[in-house]
Amino acid sequence: MSKVFIAFQTNEDTRPIIEAILADNPHAVLDEQPAMVKIDAEGELVIKRESIEELIGRDFDLQELQVNLITISGHLDEDDDQFKLSWLN
Amino acid sequence: MDMHVKKLGLKEKYAHMTRGLGWDTTYQPMEKVFPQATFEGIKIHDWEKWEDPFRLTMDAYWKYQAEKERKLYAVLDAFAQNNGHLGITDARYLSAIKLFLTGISPLEYVAHRGFAAAGRNFPGVGPRVACLMQSIDEVRHAQTQIHAISNYNKHYDGFHDFKHMLERVWYLSVPKSFFDDAFSAGPFEWMIAIGFSFEYVLTNLLFVPFMSGAAYNGDMATVTFGFSAQSDEARHMTLGLECIKFMLEQDPDNLPIVQKWIDKWAWRGIRVLSLVGMMMDYMLPKRVMSWKEAWEIYFEQNGGALFNDLARYGIKVPECLTQCSVDKEHISHQAWATFYQYGGAAAFHTWMPNDEEMDWLSAKYPNTFDKYYRPRFTYWREQAEQGNRFYSNTLPMLCQVCQIPMLFTEPDDPTQICYRESEYKGEKYHTCSDGCKHIFDDEPEKYIQAWLPVHQIYQGNCFNEGVDPTAEGFDPLAEVLKWYHLEHGKDNLDYEGSRDQQNFQAWRGMATQNT
Image (tube, rainbow over all chains, first blue to last red; front, side):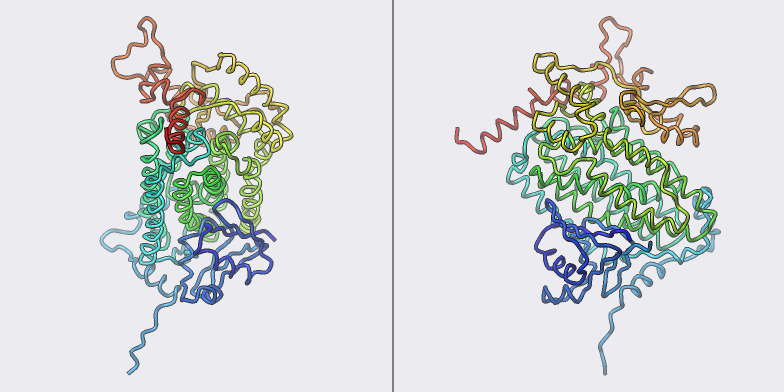
């Protein structure tokens, strides 16, 4: 399996997003770099709208992720409830 | 009565606001409206199969892009209002940012034009909408980076005429020719060149480590435009990858064409990134990671995962990558050595690393730095300290394809300059590597037209009007610099003794003292 990753700017908006991702993806590894946070994961990584909403206490649209997104690796599949990155091989 | 109206889900909304906006023409046949869709040989049977995984529609696009812009300009304003330029590690850093802003930023504008053209030329509505968004993204990047140039141009040399220089200066033709080559191809090749090779495979190497480097070096303005641009790149990468998958799934005959383009553009992109390697290893006063480390994370691991995935379509890893595992130990040192020698003709400053920096390079490049580069660099530094700073008064020969000077060495001998020769219609052409020779030999008719800045000087095309190259005491380099709008003694030469160095020290002194 190959690794997928996602990176965000380090700021107050992304703190709960990162917390939610790490909670939902126990196999994910956090890599904190200057001004950015990168999360690596074997095979796939799933970001769930509900988990973020629970932490921030308001409705969240997954497309809001784009404001602080730096980069991704892997095939993306996004709908209203989740944002999934994966490699098929 | 139930007045509750259910909002459309993302998938339905995307379907309505992309597919629902397309139509087939009736006054004119579709093939006449989209004449560029077929000549490259790519066969598409069903454009409806194209899906944007972000499922982004124009209404959401405007909303989120506006938010990115507000955040970005808040930081740029704060940077300007608080003399943010005095917070950088030291003024050598400015040379890195000069190279980036004069070499890369104008290409954002070319990318804007290219994606506008691709959006016009694809008959499918899915890629048309995605290309439209990317085209607007790219013009945003060009604008924000020009605003960043403007802030630095108020205080430092070398930023004053980027557009004029891009079309003339020898090393700026490297990134420029990459985009010219892509833009003069068809829409599908453009998507592989920029959408796939540049965006998916390479922008991580351009933006991520370099912008982290800007953060390490106190350059808030660059970090912000860089990350703001990069937030769009995630979407661009996805578009590039989607385009590759789409072509490969549509028809088996597309595979050899796509493979040829991947091989070509991976190599073209890797060559351009030599400039980034040099920035990371030599031009950032505070290093974040070595070029070799960045290459291993973002190219070998990430690119490896991508090629593993594409193997199911029959795509093979480009052949040139074997050479890259040797080159990653050398290219940044060789490129910097070249700019140091030709520092009289560059619009930024050059210098030799100090002892601490050389030790860092030895630790990062244990197989090559001490053996091949430290002795040479130490010698040059000693010579400069004795007042014999070496400058070559000519310019190097350029590769006919990538336009990089012939500075790289043979894959099996780092002491021997590598060059390859091809013949076409009785003329000889030179390339820097097997990769570039291969590209040249495949389309010689295209590359013989390359505008090579150094060759053009020798042909007498790079002097101001009225200059007489046969006159007594004619100084070709001085005349070329005038034609570049590059001011000798201010924009060029060594960092030591430069106006940037003096001004930065004086201004930083004023910012921290009362006298």
